[in-house]
Amino acid sequence: MVTAHARQPQHNPVMTSPTVLAFDVFGTVVDWHGSIVRELHQLYPRVDGDAFALAWRAGYQPAMQRVRSGELGWTRIDDLHRLILDDLLPEFGLAHLNEAQRVHLNRVWHRLHAWPDAVQGLQLLKQQHTICTLSNGNMGLLTNMAKQASLPWDCILSAEVFRAYKPDPATYLGVAHTFDVPPEQVMLVAAHQDDLDSARACGLQTAYIERPLEFGAAHVKDVSPSPHNTLHATDFVHLARQLSQG
Image (cartoon, rainbow, N blue to C red):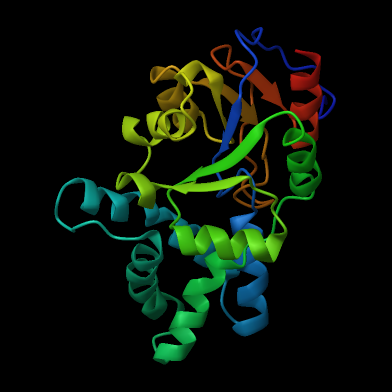
């Protein structure tokens, strides 16, 4: 069986060397599933951490849709995470948690751990490119996460800046506007093909990063290459190597 790291992914030639690399964060830079599972095991060992993490994440898109539809006004991801959490706690036998305990648990998203290659890869990438986040996470969350995980961003950009969640074009085009470059000089780096598809529709270059364990070892993700992406990399170090050869 050929492993993901043994493959030699095909990629399209980079049309022009990107000036800015904008990174999706949850799942691409940080291991949200493993981080939540570990923290739940420490705090509430009787809870099925795998099921809890997956259920919490499953509420993410429906919660954002409530904002997109106008049912809710603009709401930070921290607050959406809390709405989802409060609904989940009774299902997992945690309805007894007090306010302080709920606040602490909700802020686990600020304490997510980076994938093993992330810091080294980002350091390599920022030698030749401006690197920034492009996440639906709010500014405080992303800043605290960067501090905790030693993520060396040049700039933190968030849906909160643009008052729009991905995949709204305002987010992808907002990166280009922020740095005063054409969209084709921005490359979105993500572990999610739908995110990359939306960025590409706005004229950005795209790089897919393999994160087969994003949903845990029991739920290995298909990381097959897509011919539509500019680059396909096993991790950030591999991406840095490809860009340096471009």
